[in-house]
Every structure is written in structure tokens, then in C-alpha cells.
Length: 156
Image (cartoon, rainbow, N blue to C red; front, side, top):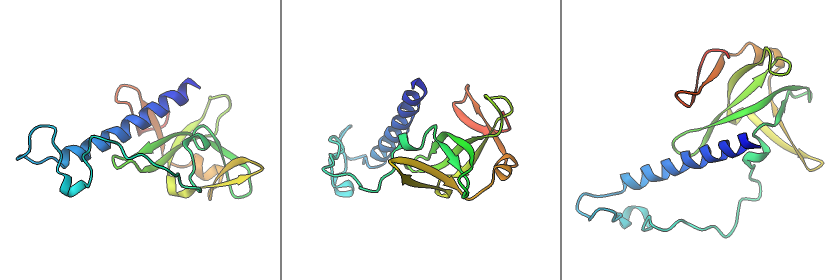
């Protein structure tokens, strides 16, 4: 559960950083510090945009993070360990843990997030990818560098 809180915090920090960068790019030199160029953004930048509805077909991070992932024949082939969010706020990749037993011999790989499909059955989300367990095991491995706070090439 603590891992989920850290993940959610990192996701919020990444999205906030992208929004701050966008705000900084919208500043002009002829305005006082803190003033935004309203002609390009249509908003003051000071107030968030509050939504009155949410997309009905949206997939929540909680339905993806730390969830099992299956091949097309519904065989468990791994677990989504992390999601990679680019600076624009788009989820670009998923880190999937494959192989091993009780954490021994497992390998973390990256796949394009667009390759993961989600379906709902009996009020439970199923994540699938069009690959076999062996194909995932043979993919390039990644490891999490705690000092840099990011995923780098090289198996665990």
C-alpha cells in the first residue's frame, strides 16, 4: 500500500512539473513577475480547471499498477510494476516484472503502454498484452536506479 502512495505522489509530481513548465513557457518579458499571458492560454494560470464530468471509459492507475498481466490465452505472464509518464503527462511505458519465484530470478522489462489492453469481466480488470511469457523473458531488462530515481538499462 505504501508503494502505491509513493507511486501516486510521483505521478502527481510529474504532472505538476509539466504544468509548471507550461506556465513558465507562457510568461512574457513585458509582464510583471507572476503575470501570465492570457491571450495564449485563455486562463490566468492561477486557478485550476475544475471538471464537472469524467470520461466514462477511463482506466484508473489503480486498475493498472501492481496488477497481473496476461497473454491472449489468459495465462498470467507478469505484473505491472511501474508506469513511465513523459513530461507531457502521457503514460508512455509500463514496467512489467516477469519470471522468477518470490522475487528470485525475476526480470523487469519495458513495453509501450499502448500495447497493453484492458478489459473488465465480473467487475475485475484484466490486463493483456499480445506476447508470450518467453517473449517477455527475452526482452531487454531494466533496473530501477534509486540514486537517479529512474529506470535504466540492465537487468536487475
